[in-house]
Amino acid sequence: MISKKVISLFTFGVFLLIAGAISKLFNAAQANIIMATGLLFELLAGLLFIWNKIKSNE
Image (cartoon, rainbow, N blue to C red; front, top):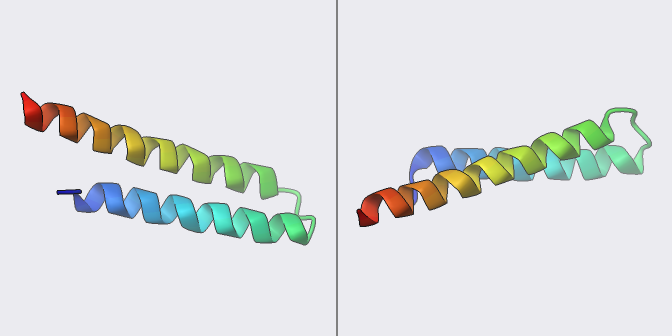
């Protein structure tokens, strides 16, 4: 089962990616930073998911 922390990080990452894409359409200066932060949250959620799967199999 996926923990609430992983779902929360994943959802916030998706929100930041969407917000970054929209701000890129309007040529905002921080669009790349917002999208990079979203990718970082997605990566963190994926790593936590994998860590929990490995930890539960031991």
